[in-house]
Image 1 (cartoon, rainbow, N blue to C red):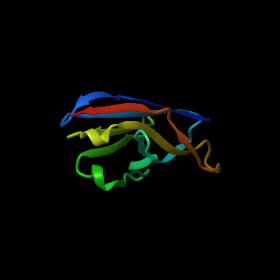
Image 2: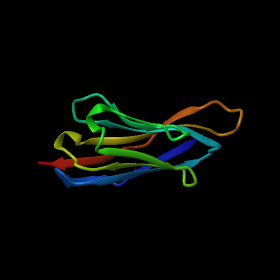
Image 3: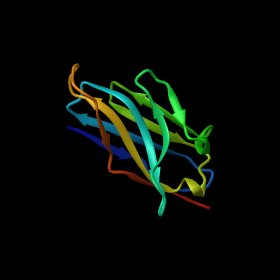
Length: 121
């Protein structure tokens, strides 16, 4: 079992910045793709950004150029640096990771509990 714990959310004015962190712990042999998703009130959860174990990144169009995803494998942690935040970025942000507990084990997908990001206009 793997636990993902997010931190760094909060209230910020439009144009401001926040940095989200997500630390993974538990039975971890390796972590493959890690990502951030978000869910605004009344909307479906959407992909924000992903980063593979090789460091390849992908972003949804609405955050491209403003958000940067990164990871520190020594700490089993993924980050989301957000700049120039907009009110439409307001949502609960969830961390996601594919992890396996041994070399020959299958990957399982895990979710964090979410952290609230609120951007005021």
